[in-house]
Length: 449
Image (cartoon, rainbow, N blue to C red; front, side, top):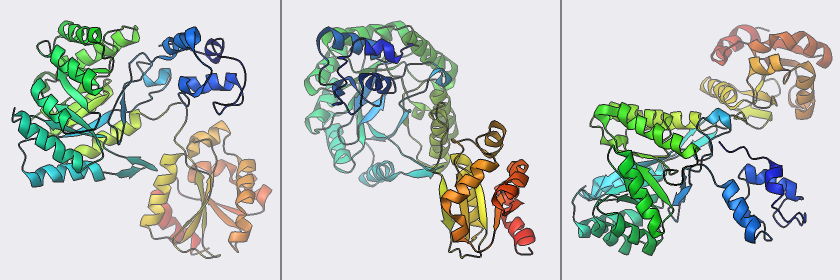
């Protein structure tokens, strides 16, 4: 892992504090570079040796590869082996495969599935990133026709999958996209490398369970000029431990600043014949540094666990997932409706909101700003206390929203109830520890109060 601080970068900056990058000072620009909120191109005065030095300093340990014009997909670009060392920047891209031997109805159904897929979880929209078109017919003309049809029916990034350079060339001639070319082997690296140069496309180097051969294919491609290279060390569902071991070796090599194998890793769990084995393989690949996986299963029981796991792994440990603090309304509340309170930790908020909605309650929900922490942690850490709760109540003007003076706080925040009553003059009711108990609480405590 590279240990870069703002001062390391600042010494190579022009130090004019011109503000043309959008930041007030060059030091602020340096901090934003580390966070990847800005790029070196955002500074118009960087050039020469300083630019060269910064390009080298800020280059991630794993080379970032981008493919797709209409919906660009970034893979790789990581600086650490484990998330807690810093954070992960680019989540594992998930591609769904289609083949050029599918019937038109099946083909377009799968394409539409990927294009329209959108699942919301704890306030985030989870999507699929790409479509992998496989040349199972081994016929360049059929493959090109399939690629054209897919391209016309989606704006997702495409991966052209064929070990025949002639098929890849035929597909490139009918599309103006920037696909990921899969794949160059020890037999075809020169032809595929020339296609990557001619059409300015990233390319995948492939060697089946042979890292020495894989490294030589990457080196051969680099000698020709292409630098946007990903690697596939082969997927063996019957011996998944060997596949994952290759993934780990490649990523560890990247962290040692290897200039050859510092490439994004591609896994193909779709090689498994059993749908459940495919899901397990995909999950383990995401756990073990896969930057892109090519998936076959489009059943929700297969896709949902994988995208959920990906979301959990690729959250930023430096910033808890939080929602905006403030007052929310559910249903059609009146001035007599109950007023609940919770924290702005996203998982807590959406769990509470879901339980309220499923109960068809008409109520208000005051969301405290606890810096993205849950109830118990924020009370223990001081992010939520009676003073901050009173401040949130005043800021939301809850006294003008409801006629009563009752607020229902989470059961795990019971310790602040007495002090909050003293500060606010309101009756503080301690609600259930779990939001699933809200309907029973309303029936037994609120309606009879």
